[in-house]
Image (tube, rainbow, N blue to C red; front, side, top):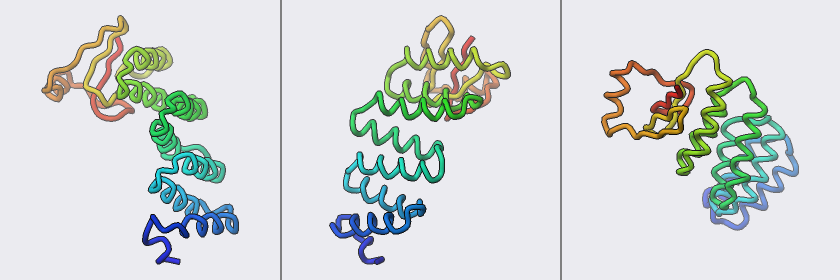
Length: 175
């Protein structure tokens, strides 16, 4: 069996894995191997289907949702990609980090207006902090003014004594 999986291009590997899944439908590790095989072959719809089956077994989580988001993006289905993240945020309504993550993804896709709307929603829901992390070095104000921090944004960060919020690396303050 090990030789079968040594070469991801081997045409026999996928049917064998699919048979293993049929015989052991609760083995998410076998499904994960199948996902990897599909992704290696750029069979993204099949990979998403296998991820859905893992999600049924293990429940919705950030890893699966982000992988499905990435695959939907590969398929140029941005609406479905964001629907996946929205679903994750709905299942975790008290964890605003998931909403921030959605805003971060909009920023990465050069959609600052949508990102701002999400961050504003988070600001309204949050009572404990006004600082949210985002992967882009920008500060967004409530007036929708976007200002890019100079390359020395870390120095700015230190001068203002800002700390990371629940997101990725730099910061967004919403005043």
